[in-house]
Each structure stands twice: as C-alpha cells, then as structure tokens.
Amino acid sequence: MSEKVALKDIYFEFLLLGIQLLGGGYVIVPLMQKSIIEKRHWITSEELTNFYALSQSIPGIIAVNISAFTGYKLRKKSGTLAALLGIITSPVITIIIIACIVDKLLQISYIQSVFWGVRIAVIILIYLSIKEMWLSSIKDITSWIIFTFACIASFFLKISPVVIIILSVMFGVLVKYIQKRKNKC
Amino acid sequence: MLNTLFYLIYEFFKIGFFSVGGGYATMPFLYQLIHDYGWYTTDELTNMIAISMITPGPVGVNMATFAGFKTLGIIGSVLATIALIIPSFFFVILISKLLYKFNENFWVKSVLYSLKPAGCGLLTAVGLGFIRDNIKCFPAVCLLLFLFIISFKFKKNPLYYFLFAAIIGILLQIIGIKFV
Image (cartoon, rainbow over all chains, first blue to last red):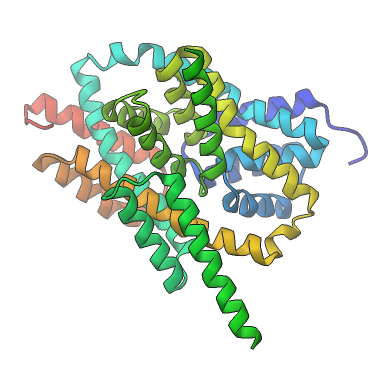
C-alpha cells in the first residue's frame, strides 16, 4: 500500500461494520473479511487472524480491539482513533434511541412476553460464550482452580470482579513462576 | 451529578481495563455496579443485556451505552462508552509497537494464562444468576432445555434463538398459559 488511507474511509468502513454486527465475539471476522479485506484490501487474511487472536487475549471488547488493531496498521494513532469512533457510532445512537423508549415498550404485554423469551435465550448465548472461553482457557489443574474460585467467589460470596481477577492473576503467575523455576533445576 | 459523572467514567474505564474475553466478560462488572452504586436495578440490567444482544453493534459497547444512559442520560451513555474503549486504545498501540512479541514474554503469558479462566468463571457466575432470576416456572424450564439441546446443532446464530424464544413467549400469552 503506497498511498495513505484516508481517515474518513477508515471511519466509514468501521461505521458500516458497527451497523452490520449482531452478537459478540467472532461475528466480526467474516464481516471484516468481506469489507476490509476483499473490498478495501487494507489487511491480509493472515493479519485478520492475528488481530483476532490478539484481540481475544487482551482486555476489552473483541470487536473494538480488532478495529483498533486494523486502524493502527493503516494510520497509526489517528487510524486507531478513526476505527474506534467508527465502530461505536452506530451502536451508541441505536441504543440511546432504544433506551429512550424502552420503558414505554415494556408496558405492552406482548413485548413483555417477547422479553420473557429473549431473557431465556440470553442464558443459552451466555452458555455458548462460556463454552468457547472454556475451550481456550481451561487446560490444566491451575486453570481449573482459578475458574472454580472465580465462579464461587462471584456467585456465592459476591466478591467484586476486580478483586477476583487480581487474586487469580497473582495465583496463576505464582504457579507459572514456580513451574519455571522447577524446570530449570 | 459531577460526582456520578466521575465515578461513571472511572468505573467504565476499569471495566475496559479488567474484562478479558470480549463483551460478555463485562457483564460481571455491570452487576457489580448495581451493588456498589445502584445506578439501575437487576431487572433493568437483565433487560439491557437482552436488548444489547438483539441490537446491532458489539454487545459490550451496547451494554455500556445502555448502562451509561440509565445512569446519566445521553451524556452518560457517550462517556461510559468512550471510557470503556480508552484502555483498548492504549493496549492496542502498545502491543502494535512491541511488534506482537509481547505474547512470548513469560510474565505477559502467565498473566494472560490466568486471566482467561478467571473471566470464564466470572461469566459462569453471571449465567447462574440469570438462571436463578429468569427460570421460575415450568414453561421457562422447558424452553431453556429445548434451546440448550438445539444449541448442539445450531451452534452460534443468536438471531434464531431470540426469534424462536420470542415467538414461544407470544404463543404462550395467546394460549393463555401462565408464566413468569
């Protein structure tokens, strides 16, 4: 790529992605394949796979992270900013509109019935997301212990997630460090 | 109000910084905010999550916008969303500068190794809470079990689950079966 990609193009492409996206996590990858790779030729398939893997392992929303990585590749910091603003524009506007009318809508009895069903479907989606995270994270006894601790501490003991995460990281890093020392001996 | 504004930005920045595993991973933090500040109720959050999942856009962004709106209106929704993505901005720039080698560093690897199961455990707790709060009658148990079984075949297209569940809800009301 010899020419600089215009910031407004970056913003616009991610704005479109924000409109099309439905659901979390992996959904953005096939959409980016079409727009960012096949239409714009901004990044390669390999880069996209790479960005997705990185986006999953660092904190933050996956779709937001993957947009930021792409933006950075195209125009460094300003590109990152353009991509980030692009991806959030449509959801922010849509949700504000919905939030304004939701209380009225929920007074309609049919909408209440719809929500009764939707809330149950949410449980399945949370379950599917847990399953996906499980496959990439629970690999040995230490990760099992962290998982069980986090779940019990949050559900039964109502300990704050931040505290749970800090304790989990301290425990996990300590175990890894001890293992490393042992392997060296 | 300024106080709330400050705490809102601070809390959503913290969520962006600590949640690993995507949008769903922000849920435990959103529940914690009920406990710490009472900006919205558990019922409201449950509906916010459901709406965020059936509205276009990243689920995590949708939920943050919604929670921000409940707390401080339009200003709140914009600020909560921006605060949520600021950590991403810095993480991504930092990692891009390190030429992706950060994944090979022992300490980084160990931190990531521990973060993922913790995030998974926290989300499981949210799922359990959802079951406790929303599965209160026989039709609900049946619908949940049915969706669970078809999830082995359908994998992940959220739209079908929501459509099907919504239709069942309306049908039950038309037939006149009581459900809560």
